Length: 221
Image 1 (cartoon, helix red, strand yellow):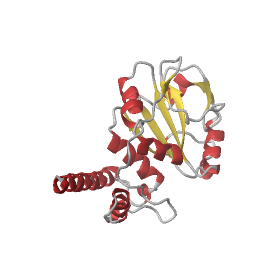
Image 2: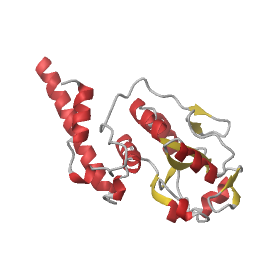
Image 3: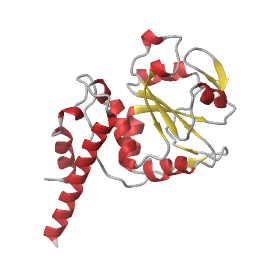
C-alpha cells in the first residue's frame, strides 16, 4: 500500500474519541510530507510572519466574519520580539509542509505583537493597542494561540472566554501543534473536551506509521 493511502486509512481507523463532529471536515492523516520546507519572513518588528497570515484593519469582528465566509476557523496568535519559542514555531513546526498547508487551508490567523502599538477592535467593540489587548485577554506567554468557536452570533458584544474553544501556549512540538489545530477544525471538542486523549491517540498512530516505515526499510535491505 502506498504511504499516502496508508495514512488516509489510519486516519479513518481510529478509536471513538478521535471521531469528529458529524458536520465537521474529516480528520487529516496523522502526519504528512514535510518538504519542501516553508520559509517564514522576518519583519521590521523582529517577529517572524507567515505570508498567509491575515492582513486587515484589525477589527476582530470583521476578521472573524471573513474567516467564516471563507469556511475557515478563526484564531489569534500573540508573539513578541526575542521569543525563542515563537521562532521555533515558525522554523521547526510551521516549516513542515503538511502542517503549514493544513493550518493555511483551514484557518484564518491574525498575528498580534504582545507589546505592539497597532489599534485593534475587540469583539465587544472596544478599541485598544495590541499590548492592551494582550493584558485584557490575560495573555501571559508567547506564543499564545487563541482558538475561537465556529459560530459566535449569539455572543455579540462579548469578548474573551465565552467566545473561545481553547488556547495553546509556549513551546509546542510539531505533533501537538498539528493535533490542536486538527482538534479544533474537526470539532472533536464537541464530542470530547479532553484534548490530551485525542493527542495521545494521534501520537500512537504516528508511532505505528514510523514502525511500519522502519519495518519496510528492513525488508528492502
